[in-house]
Image (cartoon, rainbow, N blue to C red; front, top):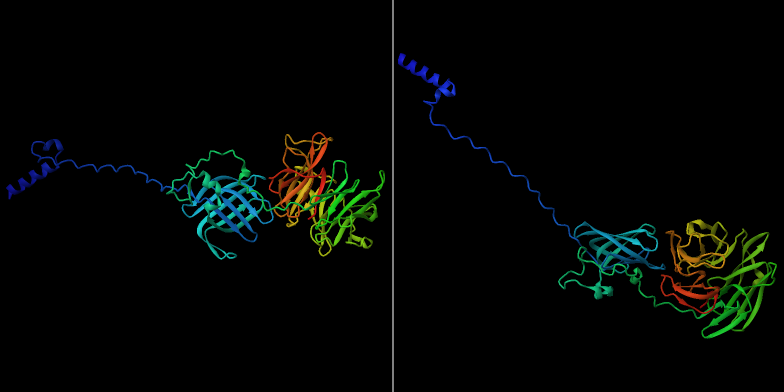
Length: 471
């Protein structure tokens, strides 16, 4: 028993002794525990590549209102609306909202600088009017015009410039483009090349104008007749056979006469005498509106065609100028503050001229406002610049004359007269595609000119000034 206790005490002593006391008798050392290997730094997973390919060569359109959009090789290039001139767009950046499914194209309205965005969604789209299924749903947002909804389809055959400039590999999808590789070398080309030539216009059959000597000339086809030695405020009937004009009867007084010239008979007839002026045919030539100075006011009066003795007041309040008929029952008149749509079947409507003219033009009593023959919401205004662009010609008293288009609903203003041209007395053609105006030719001569409503096709026309269009 003693031997057992001694052995146990010996073992316990060696187990609890300092490490140095065990060097001689300690068993072989165990291998050091291995340090766990350091976890490698996390390697970032590459982001999924974002496609830079966007649909191009797309024709989009919609209804209510009727519109269409051309989305070319660089993006949106032109927006068209029924009975409005086309809008040229300057393409900007494009982004993939949902790669392969949705894209946003940015652009600028080149005439006004307004922002435009076009959203394309690759999803089935139906046009109820045509009962056709389209590839894209399209939403166009114009800062001035508003939102337009419609459908679109890839239609390369509608883009002749694509066939000329197409540098894509034949295996490439013509419905897509790589923006990084698509570098158009013609960056500075005229933006108006996206406009299609206007070929469906109708040259007037009958026009009236003042020649260089101030005589009233009526022209039908190749036949020209001198109607009067002088005259002003001409209005030609829609069949081009009856001409109204105002003759001054006094060099010092206000006495005037409204005269009717009939082409078939070749005779002129005095209709109304007094302090009268600015006679206009109604759209169907059944009535005549004119200004009559009564009760110290310029009032709007009308009479049935062929019965001037039945003339009666139409609007008793004072105006400065009569601007013609806006419809069969409504005339447009102005003073120096407002434009008035005066109707016999509804309350008069008023728009401040400052809203129409903006800061670019100044209001004067000689200005003219003309309603588009097919779109009562589009005006053609002749006015003088407040601050003219550099290089704009001036007349003998230092005024810069121009004319512009104004959209009543969108409040969109577009200068139509070229900046190198002094233009005045602008009038619509009957088809609404042409504008005729008086152009100042240095030093003091005038000539009639024509320009299309999209700003193209400028050319000289017959006569010196004040051209009005009939048939």
